Length: 166
Image (cartoon, rainbow, N blue to C red; front, side, top):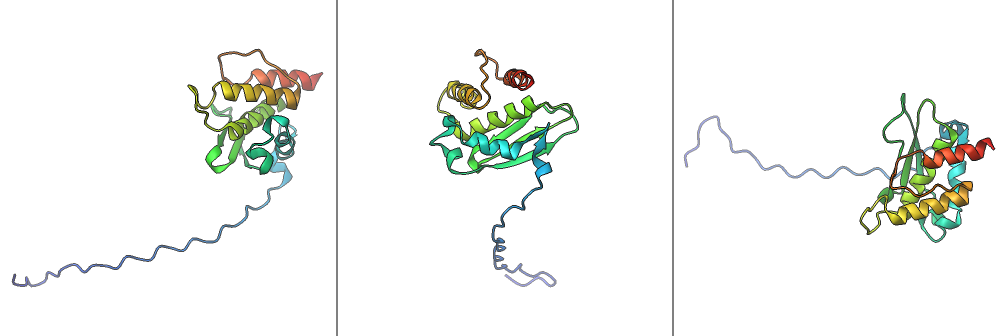
């Protein structure tokens, strides 16, 4: 094929070397005030809860999960979440949060890390999760809540608040 003036065949570029990943750095230690929510030091409470018999033999007994505290301007729909694959959890602080709310959320998310995704009809909040949560709440705070079909936040928080006031 004759060459067309002004047109050049595009050259193949050599694939660029992938950027080198920086060596993983240890997360910076956060000040104690970062973990303070409604008068509760969540980092210290997390350490206490990890030692519960309900979590013995599981991943929480062996290692400390990463804890993040989100600060919201108003009450969110999602007050906490856990990522079992990354062994981390998050608790959201919002205006008007009570100690019972923060404690319930922290323990709820720790149970997610302990149980993970169960092989049952309701993988995240099924029978295994509810049984483990009830046991852990009893061991940690001495509270029991009649079983219900609802998984909404608040039932244990109310019981914890009553115990804290007593």
